[in-house]
Each structure stands twice: as C-alpha cells, then as structure tokens.
Length: 593
Image 1 (cartoon, rainbow, N blue to C red):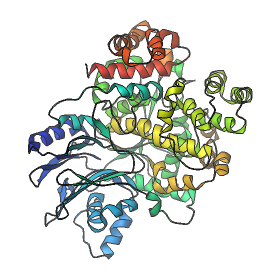
Image 2: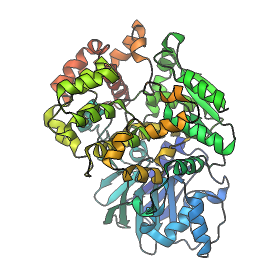
Image 3: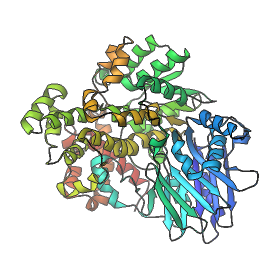
Image 4: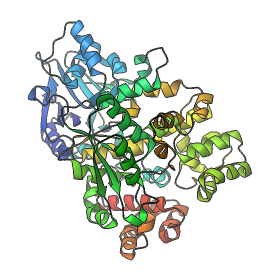
C-alpha cells in the first residue's frame, strides 16, 4: 500500500534526508507523500498508495488531534472491520472508512500487545510522544518488507533498501557475504541485504526504541493468540480470506497461472460474488505452449468462471528491451524469472488495476512443490536406490538425479539440499540450517523452512517489489493467519496424507476442473532454455555473467567460479543457475565497485 520511513538522527540533519527517502520511494505510494518531525531529531514519512478510503483524511503519516500519537505503515489489515466494531463499542468514533484509522486507534488502545490481533500484512512505525517510544514491527508472514541501518544510536528505516540508502550520508559497499546464499537459493540471508550495514527486519520482529535511539525491547509477534481455539474449517476460512483480500475502493485484479492455487481463488471469488474481475496471464510463442501452457489452462478456467481475461504476450525481444528498466526497479536481486513476469504484467495493467491478487503461499502450506514429493519419498525410505526409483516414476530423470544427489545424513540437511539450485558444500550447510524451524515432524519442519526462508525472501519479495514498482498492491489470500493456523495445526501424518495440495485439488475437482488439478506442476517462469537457441539472446545472457566473473569472481567459491566461466555447459542441465547469475550480474552493474 505504501512506502514508510523513519530517521532517528542525533546530528539533527534529518529533514533533507527524509525528503530524499520519500523521493526514492515515490513508486510505492504515488498518490500522497508527507512527513512529520518529532522532538527535533526524529522524522517519520510515508508515500501513500490509496486503496481504502481515498480521501485526504486517511493520509499518512496519521497524527492524533492532541499530537501524542503518529502512525505510518504499509500493508492491509484484513480484519479491520471486526477491530473497528470493537473500538466503536469501546467509545471510539471514526472520520474515515480506512483500515489506517482502525490500526491507528487500535494501537492507541492496545499498543504493542495489539499486534497479535492484526490479521493482515504490514510493516509499521507507531510513535507515542508521551512515553517517548517508537514501536516498529513487521507482520509474521513477511509480506511487507522493512529495511534498516543502525549506526550508534542513529537509525534509518524504510520499506526498501533504496529508501535507506537515500537516507544515508555515505553509501555502503556491496556485501559480498550475500553471494553465498544467493548462489544456492537466489537471495540474501533473510536478516541482511546486498548492502553492508543495511539489514532487514525478520517476519514478526518487533522493536521498541526510545527517542534517543536506545533499544528498549525486542520481541516477536505471536499471531496464534488471535486464532480461535476451535479448529478452523478450511474451506470456510479460505472463502473469508478471499473476500477480505479483495476489499478495496479501487480496482482489484488477479494473476492467473493456470494452476491450482490461483484458479481456486478466482472460482471461490466468483461463486460468492458473481462479479467478473480483470484477470491476467502471460503467454509465449506458439511453439512453447506445450511446456508453458498457463494461457490455455487460464482460458479453461475463465470459460467456467467469467472474467475480464487478458493474455499478456512475452517474448525474448520484450524481455531484452525491458530488462534494464526492470533491473533498475529491483530493490534487491532475486534470481527468479517470476519477478520479471510479475513486473511486466504490473507495468501493462497499472492504469486499470491497483490491487493484484496471487496464489502465493499454497505450495508452502500444503506441499505443492516437487521437492516436497521427493522429500516425502525420502522420509519413507531414505536410501539412494529406493528414492531414485520412486522419484523417477513420478517426476522424471532430471528430478531423480537432482534429488538423489541431495541425500545427507540428516533430514534437515537433505531438504536444504533438495531446495537448492545445486549441491551446497557441506561446510556451508550449517549456515542454512540456522533458519530451519524447531518443531516436531520432519515434513512439518521442511514446510516451515520453505515458508520462512524461501517464500518470504523469494516469492513474496518479488511480488511486492514488482507490483510496487508500478504503484500496485499485491495480496495473497492463502497467507491469512487463520489458514496458516489451520496448516500449523495439522499433524505430521495429516500433512503427509494431504501432500500435493490434495485439499485444494479436491475443491477444484468438485467444480469440474480436473484438467487444472491434474496438470503437471510448473513454476511461473519463462522459456529461457528455448530462447537460448538464439545467438543474440545467449550473448545477452552470457556477457554480464562473464563480466561479473571477472570483477567479482574471487568472492565466489571455486566450484561456482569454475561453472561461471562456462555457463554454456549448463544450458541443458541447470538453466535456473544461469538465470540466477544473470540477474545478479545485471543488478551489480547498477551498483559498481
């Protein structure tokens, strides 16, 4: 919904810097910008994208009449209507119909403890001048980013790292420590960024600072406290989440991948409302339609559930001509082809759609990826021969070879390897294992790792970055807190029985959409391998990789550097690794040594 900013500056030079931060993040909130100065050395700012209540009364930062409280935030509170009703019963009145005013009053009443009742996505800064405290928080699902820099008692917070950079008096160097996680997982460590000293708040993290920049408290949001003790009904909660996610005073639309997750969201939306919405799907050249068939399956859905359907054509020429603009918009490098596709869709539709819904999160809740199937086979019989045979029968030769090569002594290390782009040297496995959740059940832990590590830092990051680059808010109904609570409440055995999103597929089958539920699992990607047959496209991809190897090669381990020198050898075996390098190489060109 917005870009948010905070400066605590002991040198009292914050006003020009907060203005630079607002300028650097205007794309996140093109409808209104503003800032407030507090106590001489604190500045709070916001770039607003108007979604609920388009009036000026809902502008940011929001300040109480008596001047005691100030709020700036980014996101959407999906249960704001219920919270509003509770506040009205407590005697509060409202001047707007926005979730911003609800959040503002909710935090006035409940403060830090009220965060546990917020069902939604958010990053926020809430200032209490009487207590001389600043509450800073990021939602537990990690849908909205929040970066920061700390130097002594000086702090700079912003929704994007570029906002932080705009608020600094000197620019940090590239943090080459991030080349390790990027090489194997396509992104930086979750609490870091590609800039030295610019960090990220983790999902659910809460900081409370005083006005002198001292850290008073640090905590995590326990959203389980906001969930009923009764086991939620899956389909009922999904329906509610979908309706909440589409709440908007501006036009909402949806990306259809032609797969289970997005198809089910749109089907349930249409059944409940009878309202056609704009829907968008990418499609490629005709000779690629067998392997990249999103368009065909999205059309099938829209014949059953009418929509304002639009196919957005993507070719290698379109990719090449738009690439530099895309990289310029990329706050942090993430080597996922879905980033460009989402960005290009957002660019094409931003004049007609302001909220874009996706099916993100369902795979991580209910084991929808091929690595989940392979890991389940491993848990049943963790031997190379048995695993290879089982995977070969269901996923094919290439997958069988990849996953069989991932076997380690422990289930944790095995899954980390299965999820990586290529085998991680054993001496680095412990660095990744730090992010593995501590809970019962190997499959449960693996899905938790995917939600906390991969989903937040890849899928959600590119969706937020690509949409907000064009002033569009991205939303993901499957990440409603009640749905996550439902998945967390399943036992290890129940998760195993439901592997492959059987619950979602059963709902599609009941609606006569077996063709979609039985479709082979494909990622939201582009025919990069097929485009490599064109010599100009190969040069386009390989040249920046070669330049990166020459400039930064000594920062990679010897195995990666050797492969980087001969990327053409990986065209048939690991095209994703080539793409990963290409994204980083072109991003680094925008941030030279």
